[in-house]
Each structure stands twice: as C-alpha cells, then as structure tokens.
Amino acid sequence: MKRKPRAKAAAPPAKVEERMTGTTVFNIPFPSDLETLKGMSPIVIKYPYSVEYIHSYGQDSPFFAGLSNRKLLGTKCGACNYTYATPRLACASCGRETDWVELPAEGRVHTFTTCYFGSEEFLKETPFHLILVEFDGVDTLLLARLVGPETPEDIRIGMPVKAKFRRNSQLRPTDVYFVPAE
Ligand SMILES: [Zn+2]
Image 1 (cartoon, rainbow, N blue to C red):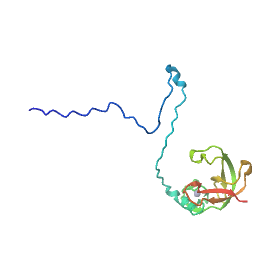
Image 2: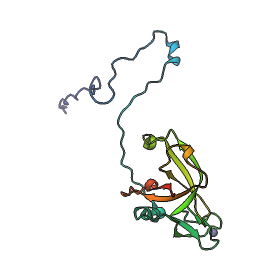
Image 3: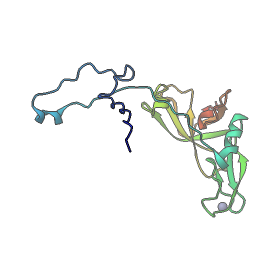
Image 4: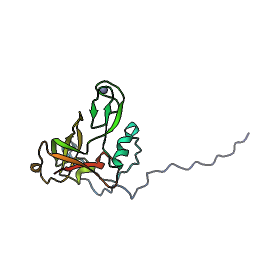
C-alpha cells in the first residue's frame, strides 16, 4: 500500500521570544577571570508580587467579631478560672474548653519596647511602641501597640492604659491599640 506523504511538522522555535516585561537587564559586568566571581556582590532585583490569601480565623473568630464591635475579648477556664488576655480555646493549665469573656477596658503597662525596624507591613510606621498589657483579674498579658507617648522615656512600667479601637475594623489584631489612660 502506498503511503501518503505526511505533512511536515512545524519546526520547533529555534529560540525563546524576548519579553519586554519584568526586569530589564542592560549590562552586568563580567570578569574574564572566573576565580573572582565568588567575590561578586549579590544581584538584587525588584518586581511587584501579589497574592490573594484566604485565611480562616476558625474558633478565634469571636475575638475579631469583638474587635469590630469595640469589645476586647479574652477567654476564661470555667474549671480552674485561669483567664487569658490572648484568647486560648483550650485551657493551657487544665485542658478544658474555655469561655469567652470581655476584658477590662483599662490595664497597665507590664513591659514595653520601641521598634525602630519592623516587617514590611509595619516598616513605614516605625518607630512605634509595643506593650504587654496586664489586666486586673487576668492571668496572661496582651501584646498591643501603645500610641501617644513620643519617646520611650515617656513610657513607664505600671502606667495605666486604655484600649482604643480603629473606627474601620480591618479584622486584624491591630484593630485594638492602647493609649495612656491619664
Ligand atoms: Zn483550666
């Protein structure tokens, strides 16, 4: 049987097409002596990067619902009465499931630090003060921002502070911050 001649397959492209997007490189100095390459400075490139991230707060959701309603919630163990300023759904002391409770509106500075550097999200806000807040009748501390004092010298251990809430809740832990109570 006589075979039909097959259509000739298109030749694969001989080279990858040049792109006009992304990093445009004009020239990178290159030594003739490869021995010197190990001493070369790192190449640093910059480009936009964006992701849509879906995150569930799960059982912590009531804490964020509280923030958006200007209520600061902690949890309390019904069995041993241990109370958590940073909510825990199970008691770290006895393992029982805890209950949601509203924390006092005022507390005291247990300790503080002033951040002159931060992650990308907070870098533009530096310097800022972070405090650990202690509340009457609560067994653990709450980490939050202290707004108001200009310098670390303006902050004192034991200083009374009160909770304030962002008017437009972002459903983030930073929805709550503290200011001096006096
Ligand atoms: Zn307990």
